Image 1 (cartoon, rainbow, N blue to C red):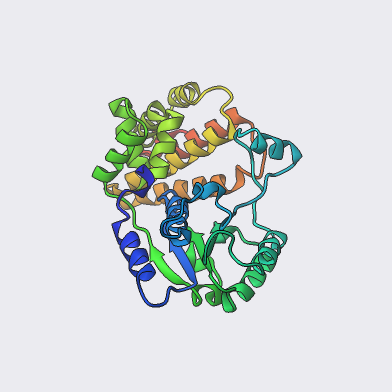
Image 2 (cartoon, rainbow, N blue to C red):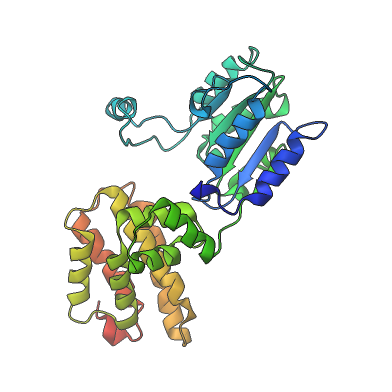
Length: 322
């Protein structure tokens, strides 16, 4: 699968542990977002619970594989989930969800001797949920194994990290990213393909998401803004045109991430003054990314703000003309 490219080391470590004398009960799957850690967790759990010679249900419906993710944001979003449509999730995994799974763990596994609990992601656990989970990590039920997906392991409590065996997932090189795009999004035009590789920073999930959003032209305009500035606002107008008049929240967030990576790629600037401007624009883009999911920005004004921040990092202040 495309999101498992380059993960030979985690698979080798996992299978060596499965073939060993005593399998550790808790695993921390650590690496940046978009590397396929959750898909790895599901596939690894399927291997873990399988019984020799017995047919197994698909991992998504296996009674001994329990997946914890944030619940739908409200009843309307829950209905979308039931209809297998895209839906918005709550921002965290609640303590009630952890306690609910703990109640199920007092019984024996259904089909075999083992079961797996996948938490995607542990970064989203409420504080009370972490404390509740710790009890299970300290005294795991017989035959139960935990796989905790994390994008920022340093933010987890040391007491959680210390009880887990760590599997590290590394970013892909550009050739591997290109392969992931060829497999997951065949037929991309070359400009979008190059832009997706540049923006993804080693994450196949990010590259495929960028490709799905068709942001190749957006990326090219953003590069022009950073390089040339926008004294007559023409490029900002062009940016609005290629992003679209009313981009949805997902496209807005993808555009913000593309802008951030354009600035990262420009950090090799030849003079200190420009590097300072790029760093300042990058910090403000990061802040914008944190605020966008919370505040209901007008899409047109948001695009203009992105364009203005990119223009402020151009070669000269005069060229930027914010």
